[in-house]
Length: 416
Image (cartoon, rainbow, N blue to C red; front, top):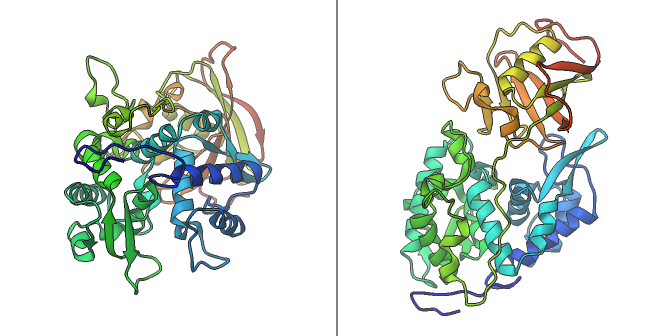
């Protein structure tokens, strides 16, 4: 590495950080050791967290046999990167959910170490919902997170590599509230850190951090050339946008500017920077078959790709004999009240379900999401895409293909 102002870096699986080696160890374990995910959390069970932790280059210390995933920062980051980058996917297995590798994981493994590093960085910066990576950012608002992040990047970009940044400076950045997120950046090789001796388990307070050349360099590039507010898709969804691709305002003569282009100048000569291709939104034409479940009661509904999620809402209402008399939302990450939602057309904030054409929203077979109807009584319908029929004529309207169980009384207050 050249340590001058125009530093360049050569990437291996262990240098300048072990993230490439550790992520592949993580993905290999998931592929070779099938297990059911946590029912409520959707996280990796305790037993497997402990085994995975011991396989990492820098295992966490001080954890107990019942330490949850969020307190393994490296594993929690890898879990989120794998899902956000569609390297692993959730898939039903009997009554449980497992993680399965996708074709993109095999593409990822074929890349150079530099290509893998920057593919993970792109997924982190563009595709990951940052509140999911934190513990204490919930309820504080996306705007506060973004302002704190920008202040943090500003401090990093103006720092000297190897010169310690104290806790008072970190706190002045307004970023201390998101301490668990601060533990993600050293995994990418941005800095070393020390933690304050006395801190609550549910919060992280850093006593100091010491930036690396890599961290200072990448912080400056991200701040100036890949601003979070334009490139992070989950954040832009919180603003009510349906984003076709990241950084779309940064087109050059109508051409998309790939994430990696800003970083080629800092990579050593001869470094292969082939990246995972972006999964740009493409319209899928066909009939989408959804299994919609309410406890043990379910309906299988087929609907055209040209219909919207609002049309699916109407079909579910009819299939379960509800009165369509309340607001609703579809939560595409299967978590109620998350930011990744499509809202009732009469809701104040979008994106709205009647703008979400089913063939346009990147649904994949076995994808599960939540349809929440009536924010008072909160009817939680589990929705899973079971098939896409691309070789049949488009349906003129939704059809119920199969059903099990008697529809509950909407105001009866009980269902099985």
